[in-house]
Length: 394
Image: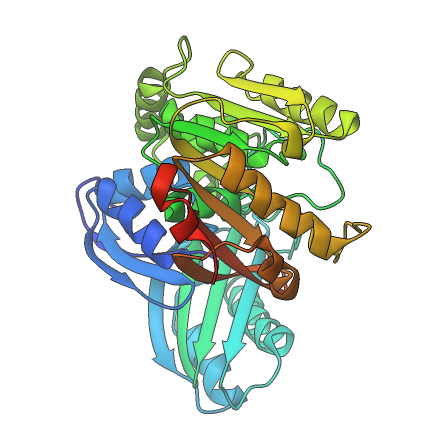
């Protein structure tokens, strides 16, 4: 592997969740990436080694940052095996290092991603064995080198995974409730809301506090990677530049505003256990001076400011059961209309039938997924005074 010069540009692919591609593209542009192009659950761009490291530290909606090393067409098994062997794998890792392959296969004559991963592993192992008489080991849980194979209609992209463990695992969560929101999804929803990081931000059903913490990290300019406990994937690469990462890390620490809140960030939950869990997570993130949480019934709360954003993820009746889901959503609508005038409200839900009971007209409906659950992010503009009734569904 030729030592990558700091300023040499190369292709980068950042993966994300369906519906968050545009938010991620903006994050990559903010890092001065070039040729930013939105794809399906991925955004491609061009950047240098510094930007690759920065993307791992700063991107809130990326799951993995990949560095493609080869593209080829594989007609059949024999072809795939031969193509994988065309790469000199000793340039990327040594016998003493472990590796793993994540394969994603779609619309291809190869049906099973596990089989494709196995075949790719065999090709790599056989190359080492032929050259040295020995073979490197596979470690699926904590490999030194993680490879990503993406096959679409028999076109293959082989990439080095610079992230290692998924970037959604920030490291600040000690406790979650029964249905925690993935951190990348939470950050993406806040990004889609258009919150300006200055107005009041309220999560009235805050659970273990993921929305609140992600919002606070944005407002205080805290890089999510600063909470990470595990090494990044690129730290095992042959061209790893420890000095460069240290510089980027220290710069990120210097940019974080830890002393005074930049926005009013308020969470409520009716369940004392959730509030305790949220407080633990918030303290673990060092944000106890930035975020306010209290035990309260949302239906008895009032807006803490004249205008701002309400972002909430009420129960869907999937994992958390609610006694009367339709009544719950009707009460959400009534409370927003009466107590949160002047706010923009965003309700993220996987129960589209129950959501009809909110009784307010949506100004936006964004399709998203929470795991395998088909969800919508519903936007309600809560007008003041005479326009208030115009916000209701006829």
